[in-house]
Image 1 (spheres, rainbow over the protein chains, first blue to last red):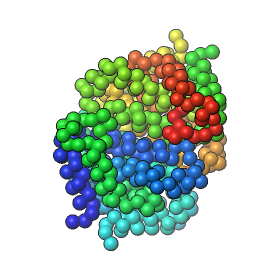
Image 2 (tube, helix red, strand yellow):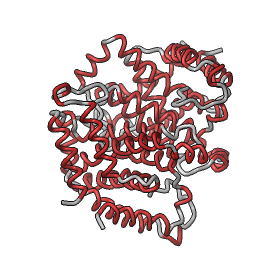
Image 3 (cartoon, each protein chain N blue to C red):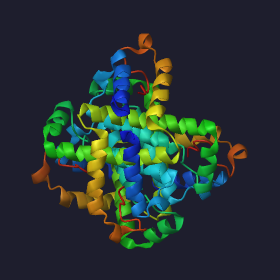
Image 4 (tube, chains in turn orange, green, blue, yellow):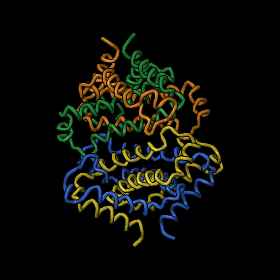
Length: 117
Length: 117
Length: 117
Length: 117
């Protein structure tokens, strides 16, 4: 079993043991991804580049950021699983679209408008 | 190579070919996770449960949602990689914390306040 | 003096007394609007309509929601003031655009795609 | 009538003419504040301070940012109106709480952790 499906199984077990699945419809999951993404962003709220680097050197701060990244990822993985979307496959498809949308020659070194990854 | 590290390599290659790494500091990545999370949420904006289910039956809608999930994931994976955080390890750590914070006996079937996953 | 400009003066005084203006460039303000909007949303995270109504009957919950609305509004008003945008004028302009974009005959009773207000 | 209540009347008229009130429960409004806040943030996504200033000199860019500020404000004002919250009163209350939480002597010139406005 690869790590992705193992992780998704653990997420699902955690939720089902608590009988929380009934709350986790796609809209509530998407909304929760948003809420957790904002909590992640809060760590960088007033900081410039140098302050961000300094902040991230601290082990405790890094652990907190890691926890927020995990929170976003867990809701996202649960949503993907619900919709029977393979996350790595979805990323592959999107990168291929982005390669066509943002050809190297045209965008190299420039932040294109709404420079989507 | 497992799928996670392969995916992260592909993301990194896409960015480095375009010389976009200079824009992708942790703050900008966290902010971009937020923006993409909101675009994902937009698909569910005015829908109730039945409308959401109906919406997600359509192949084209599902592909669009899949693309938004990929967008959130790509910025998140890039941020994790930058901070040398293993995403699956981070999730494991967070689930273990959540197990202590939300014991089955106490929370089963109830949405606890700020019922974090 | 109308209430809007009086409120904006009080916000500005609070910030300038603390010498916080240096942190409040447009990007940081926009990012903070996002963070506070997510905190507002957190109050409704797992609730259906009936639970939301019940929740909002409680005086303490209402006060917390009111505080979150104020947080979003304060950053938004500060950003508007920085950009010399009159908020009520901006809303008037946007409603007029929306009237053209969403004619009553066409959209009445239907959630149009990305049914922007 | 002050400008706030006049603006809120115009927002309500726009919605009621389209029979959209049925979609605008508090949860959907809070979620829409979030979505629009992210669209506002998108204008600053990859920009540093100098690029942001340059961007905001352009009349067309400023009009787009103004429209996004209006979108956030409209949903927020509608939510406030629904909950019978006077926005300017809510801000006054929150500023008074913040004055106690962030005394000038303690925070002057420093970004306090989660430096809420």
